[in-house]
Image (cartoon, rainbow, N blue to C red; front, side, top):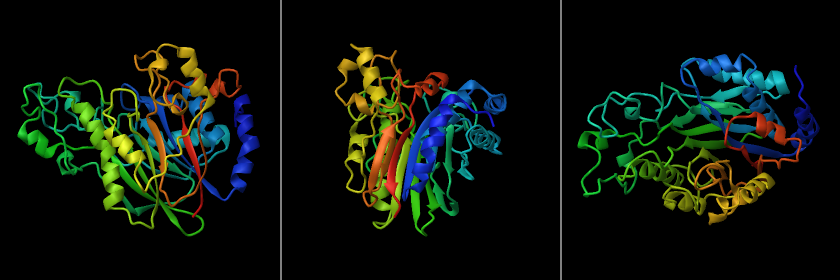
Length: 368
């Protein structure tokens, strides 16, 4: 097993975490999208420095249940299994269970989704993607996943959301043709309700998704509206489909900041204030430092820069909070954080070596 200096802290902290009667839940956009199918698997098997840094971050934070977003999946889940093997071989951390069904990214719709007059390009896939499985999702778990109780909603239609808002042209006409709107799938990746069996005989339901960015569209704002609708899906779902006694956690990259950025903001703020959800507002010293270092850009923020989870220093809006871990209100939150060390911290070496702009977000809860 290859040992890196920045892995030694994990060796010192993992025992303390294991001794606690708690569960660490995490979400991490790892930025492992590639230009073609099979390329990620090749990189994983070739000791890519980015891959090793991501494995080190995961080991350092040691989540029990971890959602990876922006991860190229394949039909046989070869890349997923190879990445799990890298984590174990490099750090000793093992995830014996994973969940990675196919979703909508990169899958052709056969319809003209962007209303450009034809239906054959990547923009007409159900979810943005150069190939099936592009920048998809993977759930890793140290505890058994009950696939028989778990559900996916890749085929949930946008129009079936309560009070949906379809995009309109500037003249007020419908942006989508009638056939498109009748068949438009809401999830750009997928919606998952994954049941995980816990050691004490209870179960926790992981509600996972990765919403489309609210940009890269036109005056019709179809991506902004879809992003807001994808977030709103979960508010409706936990109100209508999750029993009051159930324990759950929402793990997601929503691509939506509560107060900044291009998103509409309505759905994410509604969800954060939902009676059945707790927002621990994980924060980091690194995010505060990045905000100060960026000066004029992030001074325009109206939100709390300490809770930012993505480092977009070169963008006009600065860094944003887009990655979330939201436990159900019947779970007791013990702690939370964003893995974003300051530059002087030796652990910052992991951040520099990884190529993702996002930071791992974690929340500790007591086991029910």
